[in-house]
Length: 125
Image 1 (cartoon, rainbow, N blue to C red):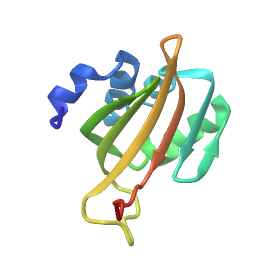
Image 2: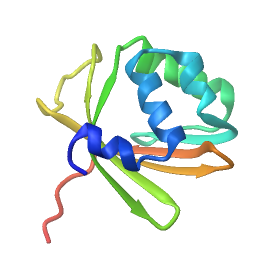
Image 3: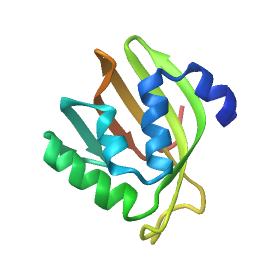
C-alpha cells in the first residue's frame, strides 16, 4: 500500500477520480467527484458550497498546478485516509522540501461528501 500503483487499487473509485482530476488540472472533473452539499476544509479553511469549492479547486489546485502522489491509504470506519506528497507552483515558503498532507475523505452515494486536508506533525508518543 505504500506505492501509488498499490494505493490506487484500494481507493474508492471516486477518490481515485478526484486524485486523477487534480493531477491533470481539470476543475470540472474535480467538481464531478464532489456531492452538491460537500464540505472541504483545507488546512483550517472551510468551503461548504459548490461555488466556494469550485473557486478553491481552481485557485488552490488547478492554477497552482498541484499534483498529488499517494504514499499511503488507510481506512477508519467510513473514512478513507490518503497521505500524499504535494507539489506544484504554490508558495513553498516555510514548507518542508517534501510536503506530505493527510486527506480525510468520506464518500456518500458515490460522491465525496467531505474532504479535510491536514499537515500533520509526528506524534511525540
